[in-house]
Image 1 (cartoon, one colour):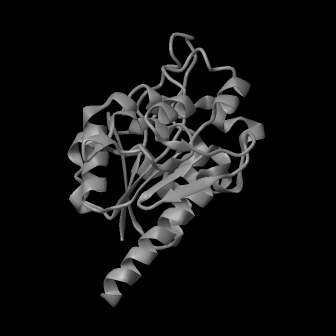
Image 2 (tube, one colour; image 1 turned 90 degrees about the vertical axis):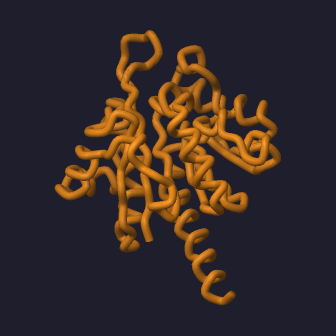
Length: 233
């Protein structure tokens, strides 16, 4: 089993002068769910190399067991330091793709033709795709059979209420909840910061950082079910 994990290379929070990037829990928790399952992992980002970490995601109040484990795991740190360039990966080499969130992806991955083509390629070849927190917003230009991929699908992602609570409603290029709804998705959510992951066929989404683990587990369950189905046919 081979999983591709996609991270942002974008480190500027709009024109605030503040830093952004990927959210550490949303990388660390899924990373260990996958690695503990014996999956072969490849990490990738638009620019390759070390992706920028959102400094807010590593504040004392944000710490989680997966983050503590990451800080003591030299192999995980080395893998993160050496991400492959996104343009160099191909969907046929992997069973699925998982997009790590954070505010960064809304600027680079959401508008990247390489990312859009990659997601379409995974989905069109019958493979599941998973995105958590802000990264479901990366689907805004992704098409399937001539319509937005999310149209008519149950999804979740970082909510308007959560964006308001972190006071970035007027900084982000778009609001994940509004954008997915505009594209015709059926957006579902729980109260702020509650873990929620939605599975609609081959599309798996998670609402926020606390949803990272369950989104990764849901992806593994979808892969296991597909594998069992292909064995029984």
